Length: 145
Picture 1 (cartoon, rainbow, N blue to C red):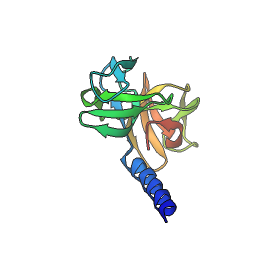
Picture 2: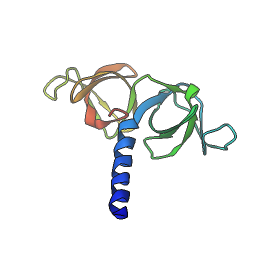
Picture 3: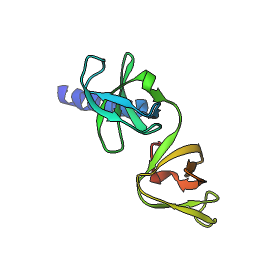
Picture 4: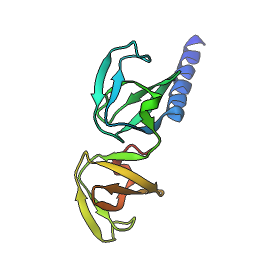
């Protein structure tokens, strides 16, 4: 009986984590990732890219535990996070004029490119990057659930 309770609690914890996980972006060009949820903890990484998307996995008062696209994790103060939507491309992809692969291709966007997300539909997101604006499939963007 205890074993079943333990398995059920693990199952519900994993569901709770997925419901609570969400994406935010970095507010500034320099943001400290810390080993723990306080300014007393040492800095692990200094991010130098504004709007870099991060996955929020836990909360602790004014700090959020994050994971980035390279699977680094740590704690960031909430003042350094923004609700601006952005994503990173998982592979080289074609940017299209409309949300279909049959529309006119605009540009080839390289893997790892940071993009600002203007809006998303069911399977596509309209993005902006440098001088280009167009549509990319949502599944190809890290930073959008």
